[in-house]
Length: 193
Image (cartoon, rainbow, N blue to C red; front, side, top):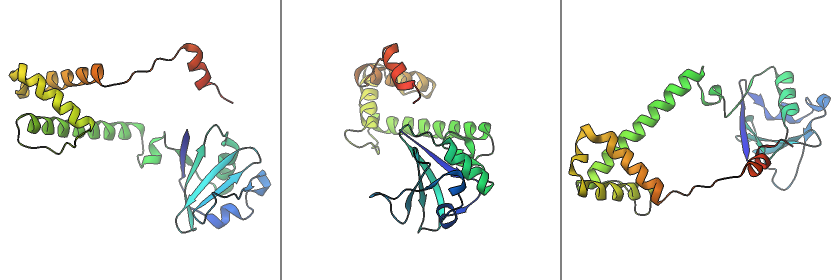
């Protein structure tokens, strides 16, 4: 498990690693995974990896595992006067609001669904498609072909949603793997260190 972060303002790697964070008891940790573009900050207990391009400015930060990096991130925020965004925030992806991010995701999802539908129709009507053998797309196309062979009306645009729902239901019942966790198992995975 990991979480990626970026800073609003650019920070030079040399400034980040060469002493400015020592007053917060944060220093560079060097090990076999350290490289010119991959460095590590530690508070003595927790670690935050710093990525850069050609050793210049820090391009991103990554927390691996259950490291509690709030102190390290908070110190960077304070020392460099910059906001820090995680991959779970809209600003990380370049959006100004959650609404913009949500709208963009909806557009991307719709575009994907439209393309999948078009490819399925091309496959079923033997006009060729871009599906590759062994992919989920090919499995869904084969399911569509089977469904249309028994209900040709599913090819009508008016039945698009029904066709896509039937494909999804068939795929989920025949090919998807579902894992059910007990409450005890859920508690183990969701507890904080």
